[in-house]
Amino acid sequence: MHFLSDELDTYVTLHSQDEPELLAQLNKETYQKILQPRMLSGHFQGRVLSMLSKIIHPSSILEIGTYTGYATLCLAEGLTENGSIDTIDIEEELVDFQRKYFDKSTWANQIIQHLGDALTIIPTLNKKYDLVFIDADKENYINYFHLIIPLMNKGGIILSDNVLWSGKVLEELKANDTATKVLLEYNQLLKDDVRVETVLLPIRDGLTVSRVK
Image (cartoon, rainbow, N blue to C red; front, side, top):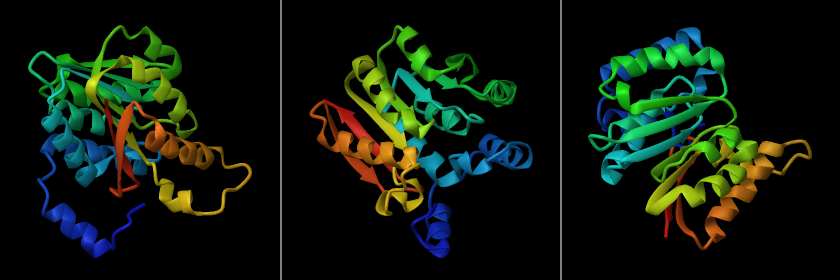
């Protein structure tokens, strides 16, 4: 969901860095061949992720939720020369699609794919992270947060996507809407947890930036 008018959204995109050609190809093929292409980060948010990663200049990134790898490549733009990004996804049918674009990029040897349940995989990652991007099943956002906090370097950044959930965070909560319920609790957790300082940005569907103290 976009919270700006279409005209303003277009203006913002046109006055941000151009979408790299490889990402434009990935974007196009995702819409042509993959289900739920709206899950793609897209041009503007991708440039936001790229900029944040370049500012942080991380040596280690964890991404929870790869989808077709668009955000992965945006985040990889900020990696140190010998840095790496671990990216986790549960959809086996997307692995080859992701790899095709990863292998075309500058960071082919720095991107490590993990297939399976992130709740199972994260505890096996014997690393400390400078940057984490959470963009997977909303029902587990709180579980992911508690798993990754011990893995964060001091001053590390946690990015959480879709935290406004198409505006549902302001609507009356439906009894069977687990995703919205968890996101409401998650947003409050990020506000209250003394281990992080947080700002929620109204970018696309909501992007929270949390800095580990």
